[in-house]
Image (cartoon, rainbow, N blue to C red; front, side, top):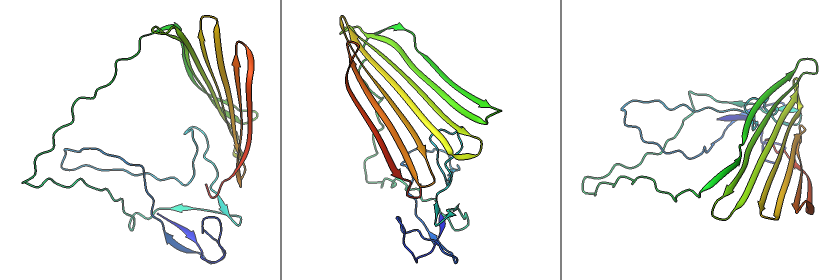
Length: 231
């Protein structure tokens, strides 16, 4: 994988730009993967993308730029290589490897579903204001742990939205509520996080509220700006 760089004026990651550009080779380490293939012939496919977004249905963030010029990711298959390490073959004088045993795990904790949960993935598009959004609901409902009598509820709401082709309008919001209750005791937490971005920075706004017996006992708020740093 390669990208355009110039060694003159340095930037945060050593990637620079001016009128004359040259190519530089970049090594990229991918996530670890282990598999066993018994066929004599098979094919491995690798995909790369120059911009990212946490939700595939949303437009990706605009590619970062240096001195006003967008960075571009190019892959030349003729000179690129995908290196896959292979497990060494066992020598004849070595003992054969013992196959793995069947997976084991603890018995699940007995629970009772008191209130059913719900899940929704809803995509909406406003054809007048060009607002598109993905709304996600992941609701556990209410379950009771039979051994202790503790009742637990968890609800997550997420919304990812953008306006037309405005990359600066991409917005992600999450709100989680978790409740614990047993007999006359009840406690809950609510968290909310909003992620937005500009061409230079990500902005993260978050808040935490903790309640006991219906009374707020703790609250925290954060407002952070993180340089995109070519992300």
